[in-house]
Image 1: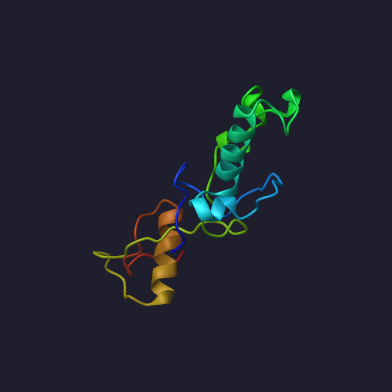
Image 2: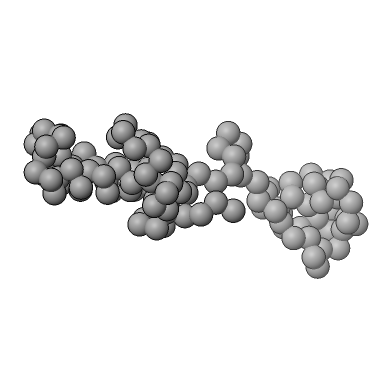
Length: 122
């Protein structure tokens, strides 16, 4: 499993948007994700008196420009399918086959309760 960033703890080390600093391996060596590594390099530039950056590009002077502070939502699972619910048929009186489980799900969806093999098929 990939190591998490030492600063934010959400992104993996060396991943995320890179701001294009000269030392592109800085983040990976320090154990940071790219946005947090960019922020660290930017703080160094800020502390040196904006020598390598102009004030209107400074993230510390303009925090809304800082990618490291933006919320990160991890992606999980498939996004192109509808989530399926799984229903337990424990305690139902129907045979435990795919056919009767399907009939039971249809019966439950129609509001008739579990299919008990005595009622007409839905």
